[in-house]
Length: 529
Image 1 (cartoon, rainbow, N blue to C red):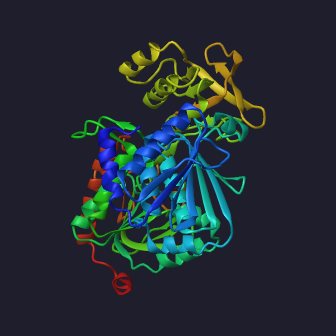
Image 2 (cartoon, rainbow, N blue to C red):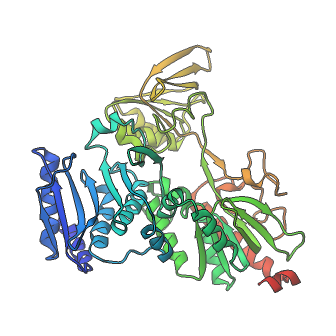
Image 3 (cartoon, rainbow, N blue to C red):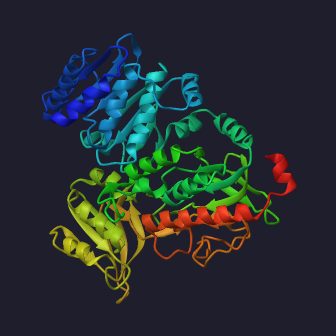
């Protein structure tokens, strides 16, 4: 199962084990079970502290639990093979079970250990889902730290019948004590916030107690990270308040147009940026969603930012880099059938539609790339473009047209997404030339029609916004309000590209530096700091 390079790498990781661990598998006669036996045998042969047995009695086969030999009450179960994006999750589960300390905030660990009640998690993932590992690793850690928490992590492709029965049409999909808990990416702090009703108040109190920053960056994508690195290098106290560090990078796979980096993937680049930011004295505040901005009344004054949990942060200068999100179709049925056949991430959810008929809405690069990837998995793809022609690069169009299970429809307007109450079964399509409408029978709809800037919370702030809701900036990243700058996809910058966002973030950081050295803080700020 593991090639020589992977075995060598895993052996190095297992050298960090402090206590013996046990792998207990439940297998049947199928091919996946044979592969599971092979994988666990190979792992056990790499370190003397690892033993594998095959006498488990779980209802799912293949499956296996990982537990510390001295504490059998704490365990995590994988059902199916955790390879692909989940191999890292498997390695971490082995290390944590073996006593290697997790790199997690101590307060969060104490919160996990202090949870009262019995929590039985079941979570479905796909091997191509780049959002799933965060959930898998959060639940794994919780199960290995608290004996009243169990986690069964299920590879949906291996258990297709179960996926169908439970109506799982989007991953990550998490169930708690048999009931749907959450669909989508969650980090450990988010899981705890849903379980511990007092978590938000505690986090807000901690954030509000922070001293004012000289530069506060709102958003942790490429633009925000670049801004922070520049201002920290200038010696200014810098903070990043981000709903999700990395932003849209977590929803992006292949990146081939970043100069100097021939190929990388979004989650990896997000990790690299986080590591780079971590090299400086930058206060990164994750899960911090901004809800209100109160600008300073004059240059040199203090700006105030309110977060969704009620916390208030203060800063002499602000850099807004909140990015953008996928645009919704805005048609009947879209909201009703979200995660029930309506999806926005082809890499995450594509494997759940294996052999089925699906539609991709959008003929730009994102839509055509999604259709190409999905055509390799699903039975048939109908690509629908509103315009009279596709807008994607010619090389992508040529690739798409060469695929035998793809139909391309231009001048097509999706007017409604249809379903049976529990899942999608079709859509209504209007021909924009003739006005004729028809129903297309299908089982999934992937929406890829562009981006919407995350600026709703700024409507009453006094910032100038474009008719599309973007923050209006000049070539230096300045807004119409002194001491407030903006960068990246949230701005009027015409090209929404990673490298452009990085450049814009750098410019905004340098502009903030110039502003701070030219405007002395007012007395109230000096006293507060």
